[in-house]
Amino acid sequence: MIKALFIAWKNFRCKKKVMLKLISCFFVIMCSVSCFFNYTTAINVRLEQIINGSAAKSYVETESMINSQDYPLISEIKEIARFEPENIPLKHIRLTVNGKEYEGINDYSYDFSTPFSVGTAQHVYSVTFIIDAYNNKETIFTKNDIQEYKEKFGDKNLEIAGKAELSSDSIIFTDYMLDKFGLPADSSLIGAEISLYNSETGEIYCDGLRLSCILDSNIFRISSLKKFGQIIISSEHEIKGSSNHTYYNYAQNYILAYELANQLSADNIPHYIPLELYYFCEIYKQNLIVSRVVFMIMIVFLIAMVVSIITVLYFYHCNQLDYRQMLLAMGLKVKSLFLIILIEIALCILVSYIITLIISGTIMFLISRYLISSLDVEGMFSISSLLSISSIIAALIFAFAILFAAISSNNIKNRLK
Image (cartoon, rainbow, N blue to C red; front, side):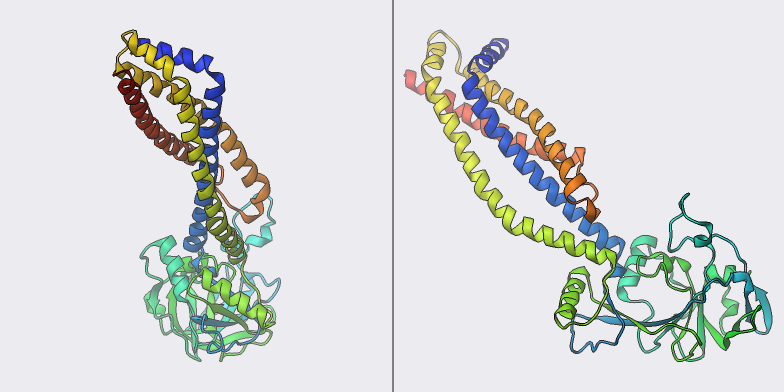
């Protein structure tokens, strides 16, 4: 074994031209395949993150009602009119429950729409007074909303008490908003008569409505509802100063929402898509290009590289034939010759593997840093992924090397007979 290792190391150092050819072939295969799979893996992981982490954002927003019969990709429609008075502290809002009055608590614990940050102004976190009026003929929470809610919060019950259903005289609160008026999320409140008014101006926002449901406020932590109001009424109950109706046209998934946006663009219908859907569209288009075009190029390229390796190994075998026959004639065993050939190729693989890690890592880092950083693709430069993919390729090449060494040593043995 030691003798075989010594001879193989000597040949590796002396036969530089052939060894460099082998190292080059191995490196090109390892580098190209590892970059390709690392890239596609990062893209697919990011797509999965968007789909699972923000399933509720698979909608296209419009300012006018769209006939779902004309656009069969629409699975659900959410119609909302918003009442959001500016610069009204919650402490000026009064909530009456069965005639008993409760004062709003003006604190800075609101973290639904904006994550806490040292550089963000304090007023951003003040508890907001927003009433969203939903069309009670349409849905309040879509299947996409529920999917993301369950993904983030498990099988927790969305409805703490009552049913999330609207009628012309019903109102819905979250446990969070009730807490901001000093009330617990208690089932005994269901059916209570609710009124909301401004203690400073005397303006009444809603009067004599019945509390039909108390919701888990975590539903408003999903991607599509973070900036929505946690007080919900029916759009049949008009509030002076509320905004125009906005329509959220949901598709079953991001791909269908992307196609729906394309259809609306073709029909010149003004629309807006969420940032998550934009990211998904851009990444999805890149993924299609990689999957269809680059994959075919990779197949042709790898075939060419395999042929190149076989050719280099064949000429290497022919050039070393006389030398190896001489070693066998001098008493070297076939097993030792097999080890010499295998160790020589293994050294080439090892050098290629090290170079691949350096070059591939640099390439993937530059791609993730400068070419697609705007798409928010995380995990592009992954050491563990690069190591695992490169190791698998090196193992496959080594398996091929074992086969070649066995065939080559056996061929030389037969020539001496």
